[in-house]
Length: 201
Image (cartoon, rainbow, N blue to C red):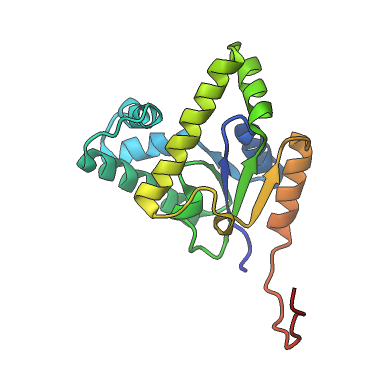
């Protein structure tokens, strides 16, 4: 594997994705991109950022705009992500980065997960809402992300082979997760070929 210049972070809602992604970027001296991808895509497609963000919100509600609008949205996002990856030294949160940039040898793909109960408690506390409302948000978010990847990239969001590293934030602190990702980014290298055959399991 080449020197890591791009880190994509996919996360379940309530798994501390933004906190870990932004802290990882800061720790490595990388640029952090999240909503900024929408900003740049809006400029590229001459569409208001609010319009692109609205497509995200509609997706969470299970409403799909016309195929033409969806295609333009996806292409604008992809173009921005390719440009950011080519610049390098970036951490990209969400936007199906694990699928869009899956063929890049200089990319490290991370997934953050946690139990649904812990996720609901975090969302409930953060937004001062009931656990029931938090669970509803989580279910909608999971459904949207799963469907988005399936529809546009023909991959399963839960497929472990999409990711180089999956981290549970159930008990790990933000600092511990950042340290793990940073170490992985700094210690990826090609292993020499071996003629030894592993025993049958």
